[in-house]
Image 1: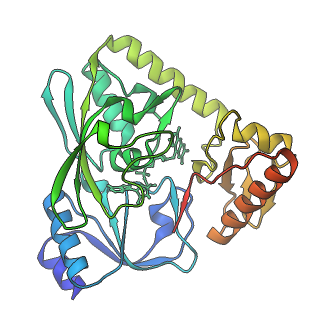
Image 2 (image 1 turned 45 degrees about the horizontal axis):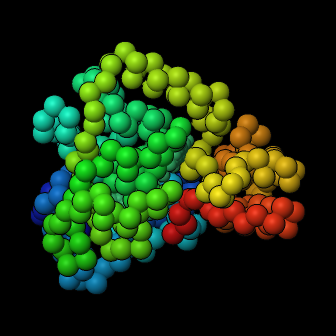
Length: 295
Ligand SMILES: Cc1cc2nc3c(=O)[nH]c(=O)nc-3n(C[C@H](O)[C@H](O)[C@H](O)COP(=O)(O)OP(=O)(O)OC[C@H]3O[C@@H](n4cnc5c(N)ncnc54)[C@H](O)[C@@H]3O)c2cc1C
């Protein structure tokens, strides 16, 4: 029934698909289906069908902050990565679809001498995931440049929400815990100097290469920054650098990252993250919380 619906509506899909291929941590079991709508109309049709038929679903972008259990997902993963439209509305206003990779958007803005999101360069997720997480780096957050977000709500209606109502704060947004699918965002940027923006982007990319274990699968920083502290420094102080469970390891290069050494399972990663949280709390009294989302 689902397969017929996807085929008839030309929605690309994969069946009994390993979620290792759809997450940057490269762990997780299989999903019954991974459906990849190409625009908001297809996303809307799909959501209506899934709701009407009581089929379980979960939305992802690039899978760079989410991991799935080894038992897999008995439902449909809606992967929004195909929703890649970028449209310049006026000189400083840009619409980007939920599936636009942050790096692609940053490059496009730089080429158009637009400033306001360059600090996101190097974040390996898409616009939708970035908004959901309020992703940020080097002193900036994606919310800094948001004007309005477009989404499909729980009743399958296409809505927009202004930045002031998005409840953005550190790694938090109104989208968390809601049954909404983000379809795109209007960003407001400011005119800047093309060369200066480029050299800033190159500089932060180099800093990432120097400091982060980018050669190993991960979800970036595994823990949120506790108020007044840095998770990586606390982890290192507790002697946890290099600590491992199965194929998951606290990176030798950056203690804030848990990395997959090759054969990690989701269970290894979760067990290691929980061990780190426990030891850090026991030794320092500071509670650290996982940033990655476990489904
Ligand atoms: C090497 C590395 C470095 C990283 N560096 C940073 C960094 O500097 N700063 C930072 O903030 N993060 C960083 N991350 C984490 C990650 O890239 C960000 O959180 C990113 O914004 C997630 O985007 P995504 O598209 O991969 O979302 P996913 O991981 O696919 O999803 C994350 C959450 O968003 C939800 N979601 C995704 N798309 C939609 C949508 N269209 N509608 C509704 N909900 C949606 C998902 O349900 C999930 O709950 C890093 C990760 C890696 C692997």
